[in-house]
Length: 563
Image 1 (tube, helix red, strand yellow):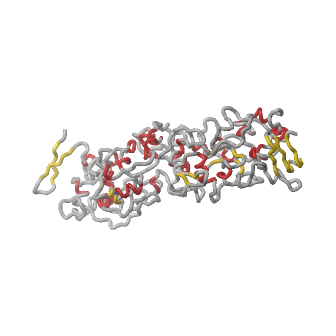
Image 2: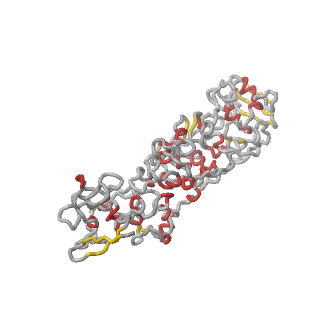
C-alpha cells in the first residue's frame, strides 16, 4: 500500500509526494544523508536538491540545480555509424554533470557552499558510473533518431515504433531514453530489462538475429574462471544476448562497444570450453592456425568482400548476429557461416555467401599478401579460385563435380558426382574437433596428416588425409586399376604431393592432355626436372599415359603405363 509523505520545499507551502518501493528515495540517486547507497551527504536531508531547485535554477530544464560543465567530450565513432553525432545536450548533458566526474557532487546552485559527502568524496568515484569526458566507449547519445536514420542504417527500428518505455527527447536519443533517473525498476535505472536484450531490441533490429544461436542458446557457464558475463543473475547465452559481447558503457573495446578491445577475446571468453560446447581457443593456439591474435582493429565490418589488408579475425568468417547450427551439404554454406560476405567463382563480391568456398576466396584469391602455394610446381598458381574452376582440366570437386568419371579408389558413399568442402581437408584436427580451419597440429591447417617429404614411408597415418576419401587398399594394391601408385608411393617412397596438385590446375595454364588427374609436377629440390628439354605428362586414355622427366634419378623419356 502506498503512503503519502510530505517534503517541505519552502516555509510557505507543502506538496504531497507519493512514495512506493520504487521511489527515488529507495535508490542510490537519493544522495541525501538518508540515502541507501555508500555515496551520500554527511548531513543534507533534502533529496531533490542534488539535481533540482524551485528558484534561481540553471536555465536548463527541469529546474536544474547544477552548473554547466563547459566541456567538449570525446565522442563515440565507428565506420558503422550513420547517425550525425554531436556534443551531448538535453538530458544527457545534465546527467553528465555528475557522471563525467568533473564537478563535485555537492556543488549545487542553491547552496552557498558545496554539500559535503561521507568519506570525503567530492566527485563521482572512479568506476562504471564515472563515464569521464571520454565517451568513445559509451553508447552514443544526443543524436537525431528519425525515420531517415533508420532507413540509412538498415538495422534500426523506425522511431515511430518506440511506443513503450524507450522515449526520445525532441527526436533525439538521450540518456533518459534508456535510463529513468527517478526510479530503479530494473538495474542501473534502466527503463526495461536487459535480459534477452529486451531493452536493446526496442531500437536495434539486427539482420538474422531472431534465429541466431546467440539469441536462442540455453548454454550455461560451467563456473571455470573467468566469468564471461556481466550479470550474475543471467545464466544462459540467450539471457545475456547482446551483452555476451557488448557493453553499452565504459566498454573495453571502443569500436562497436565490445567487452574487450582484442576482438577475439569477445568470442573466446565463451568459446573456450566454458560455455560453448566446442573449445575454439585450444584450436587457435595450435602451431598451424588462423592466427586471430596477430591483429587489432584491422577488421572492419564494412570492408570490401575481397580483403585488401590480409588479416584473420573471428568475425572475418563468422557473423555473431547470424551464426546458427543449421547444417548443409557441400557446397552450400552451413549456419555457422550465415550472413558473411565473400567472393564467388567468377571473382564478383557476394553478400551473403551461398557457398562455403566463397568465404575462403576472400583471402585466397587475388588478395595482396595472400598465402602462396607451399609446393613449387611446374605450373605455379596461388589464386585458389582459379585452381577450382570447373573449366579446369582437373580439380578437386569443391565448386562442382570433378572432371574424371573413373576414380575407382573413392570410398562410399563418395562417387564421381560428389562434391566436398574446403573444410573437408582444411579443418581442426582431432576427434570431436570443431568444424572449420581454426587450428591444427598439421601444416596448412590440415584436418589429418598429409606428408609431403621425399622418402616418406607409406602408412595409413602418413597419408591419412588422402585415405579419408581414397581407399588405401586400392591405392597400394599392385593389381589395382593404376598399379603405378604402389610402385611410387610404397616402393619408391615418393609422396602423393610430388605428382598431384591437390587443388587443381587452372585452365589458363594447363590442358586436358597434360594436366588431367591433378598432374602438376613438383619441381626444384627433390622434384621433377626436364629430360632432353621435356617435362610433361601425357594422358593417352583410360588408365593410360606417359611421363617425360627426370625424377628421383630415374629417367622417364618417356615411361608409360601400363608398361
